[in-house]
Image (cartoon, rainbow, N blue to C red):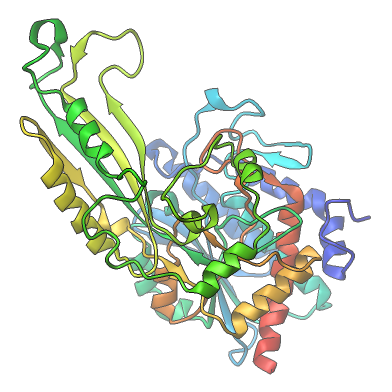
Length: 468
């Protein structure tokens, strides 16, 4: 019998409800593989993760192969029914961020546990849960079709270095362009609006990262001997970082906003129509308060406006008893989220000029901006494919959508859309409460099932678009 957190009483919903335990068991098994791409000692685990997924795809009926994007294993699967049918390319990733076990209280990071309607474990939501939703969405779709193949041609590309910036992914797409050719891309690495109240994601911000390292003395030096005239790299670094925003919380890099496209009033109205409550948002995200550029709503700050954040700041003795020394060096990691009109190269040049102009005398610095891993923003165009996604989500969740939203994070959506000249649809199963990249990550079981149901319906809806 379907469970209360299944995705409805449709044949698709009943199928997923009946197979809920098997679906969660499969996800639990995959979460136990610590596919942390940033840790060289985990390289074998990343490959194990890829092999596991390839086998799981074959069980559903897909033809699979492990491709290599540089040193990273990428899983490819396909089911070509009829060349005359539309072809959909599904994108996601199977690599994960590292975890700090000492900060997890619900379970160990790679020891999944089901509790109160949530499955806890590193990358249960981002993005292994989203891939499992695709596997079972396809199973439900096939079951509804009574033994026939999928209603559309399906191709899957699940990379293994997304958390490293997908630095080899563009080369892989170029090499496999003909095999991966498609009419529509479905991007499954996004966060949803709310459990039981879904919204359609129609945009994704771009992303550019930077590392700023400042060097002062030749070594750590005792402050009691040199304090006063000695250069302090921590002071210099903090001065530059503090100047990145003005009193209205606008990014203060000259010409930064020159290329930012003015949001359409229609888009701003879409965001205003969402049932947004600031207090509820703070509670859901555990951010404690709201800040940001003056004159813009929280929704607009998340999905329409660029942002700049200092993610790490390191100097001196971060652990243990302090040595009372002026540190030799100080370092910060910076993340810039971009919006339509902005491009990685231009933003990188603006940041370089800003740091050169603002860095105090007496210190040296190195600013590293890996432009090859930068990602440009993307907006899904209106059209039949987007209409099909809306209908599929409403069928999958059993309710009308709450409207349209954006994705505040980044990903290679613009790259995929540009390479294949195809619209990119966003269909994810994450929620702000899922603690991506943080401790006690989890996925909501109802969200997982409803997402799988939406996927099952999407293949039918996209086929119907072609027939119409």
